[in-house]
Image (cartoon, rainbow, N blue to C red; front, side, top):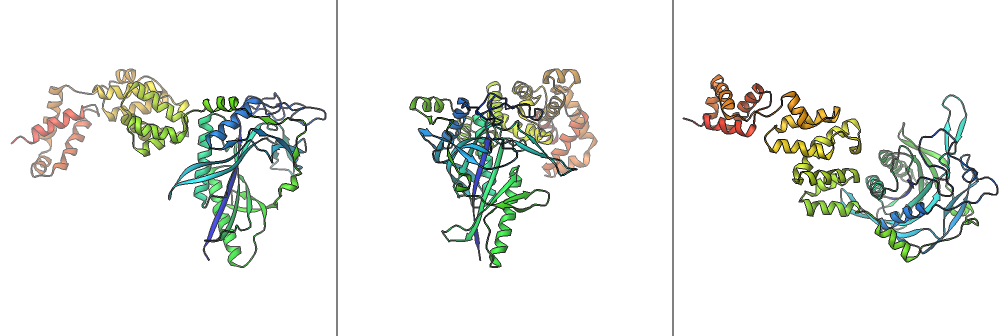
Length: 477
C-alpha cells in the first residue's frame, strides 16, 4: 500500500529582546548558570509579572510577515505541567485567544512553490534547561533561560515530505533573521522545532494517528527524524499494527526515534486565563506602526534583485538567503555598479572561503569597499582576475588593502606591449610543434601558448594583450 505522510511543525522562536518577557532579567546567552534570575522568573510566591512591550511587537512583526491576522484582543493563559526546570509549575502561554491566526508562507521545493498554512502564532515564556552529568545519574538545573520570550508558530498539517519540512523551517529562520527579532540559532536553542507526523493511504482524507517528535536541533536532524519515522510507521501499518499516539525523542547518534511518553491533550494542561496579566489590546494605531517598521522581506528582496539589478533568479536567491549577505551585496554595488560581476565574485569566490571556515559575512576581512577596489583594479588593467583571486584570499586570511598588496608584492599586471611581445615571440620560437598544430587548424592549442606566457610572467601578463599578440604572430604566414 502506498502511504502519504501528513506533517505539521510547531516552531519555537526565542525573541531577541534585552530582557525577559515578564521581568527585567537579562536574556544574554552563555552566562554562568542561575545568574540571570529574579523572584519573578523563579516563580516566588506573591510576585507579579509585567509584560515586555517589545516582545509583543516582535511577535506582531512575525505575524504580519507570515500573512497572519492579528487578534485585536489576546489573552495569556496558564499551561500546567510539572518539569524540574519549570519553577512556577506552569508555563504562561496563550490558548483560546492567541496573538495571531490564519497565515501562510510559500516555500521552494523540488516540485515547485508550496504554500504552507499557519494555524496560529502565540506568545509564551520559555522554561529553564537541564544539564545531565555524563558520569553520574545527576541532572543540574539552569534557570537563566526561564522567562525568555518565545513565539510558537504552529503550521497546519500541510507538509508532505521531510524535504518540505526542512524548507519550511529554513524559511521561518530566514524571516526571523530578516526581521532581526531572533538569531534563529538552532544549536543554541533560540529556534526549536517539534514535528507531528502521521501516515494515511494515499488519496484518503482522514488523518492517521500521529506521533510527536522532539529533540531535533538542526535542519538535518528534522529531516532525518521524519524520514526514520515514516519508515517506522510504514512498517507497523504494513504488519497490520496500530500506531500509538505518543511523544518520541530523536537519537541523532543512532538516527532513530524512541518513545518518551504518551501524548498529552489540551485538557491535560488545565488551561485557564492568567489572573495576573490583563488581556492585550491591539488597536489600529499600534498595529499600523508595527506594520510600517517591517523591513523588505526575503521574497520581495529576491524579486527586486532580479528586476533592479538584472540578476538571474538563482543569483538573487543565493544573495538574499540572509539579510547580511543581501546588504553586503548592495553596499558593493553602490561602490562598484556592475551587479552581475559583483554577484559572481561573492558567490564563486567569497562564499567558498566563508563556507570553508564556517564564517559569517559580517566578520569577514573582505569589506564591500575592499571588494569594490579589487574589481576596480581588474578593470583598470592593473591586475588580472587570477592575481585578484590570490589577493582576495590574502585579504580574507590576513586583512589589508588590495592596492597596498599589489604594490608591496609587485603584482601589477604587465601591460607593456614591447615587453610582452618579446616574451610571446620567445614562447612561439621554443614550441615549433605546437605552432604547426595551430596552423593546421587545432586552435585549442592557443591555451598552451597563453599558459606558457603566464608562467614566464608569474601570472602577471595582461591576458587580453597576450591573446592579441599570439594571434597576430601565429596567424602570420
